[in-house]
Image: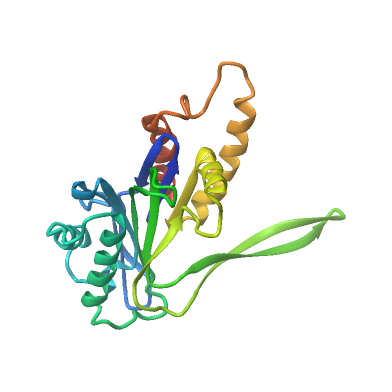
Length: 247
């Protein structure tokens, strides 16, 4: 399993990722899994940004993808977050011969940093460079047990658009919302999850409900300090790594 998370909040930008690299055969079956060695999160100091990657990156290049990505961004022929995302999209397309990958070869790069919002104020911004959207669909099997409808089995299917050329997408702030609406989202925390995130999403949803209940206790808070970036990262990272290593 592989999982990358990027959260934008008033505290700043937190990225978390598992360390697993999964090797697949031509039928898409897992043949090997490494838990160490590859870097999933890379700093881009020239524009005060960070990037992470997910998907079938072996379809882009036969090289170690973290090293390939570092070589791509190190010359920095860009001057801000938006042009960095453009540069990454162009590099991915060149590596793929300017042709879309095959149907199941989903790949994406999280690009996060600070950039001016429409009012000119520097705030967290998130670009997602990818080759087509996709989503998990859940198909429950329901049976009557003692007069009650019960879910006895859950089947997960990943449905994706036809692959296309890589392009940058400004996911946050949302251009269809006002600045105040986006600020409200930022206060609550804007999170993007990619990779095999279904398992994480199920557990994270239950944890969030439990934490919301516990946070009603005076003097108790998870994360300990929501306005502190390290505290928010400490909240995201352990769950991501635990699920990645357990599935």
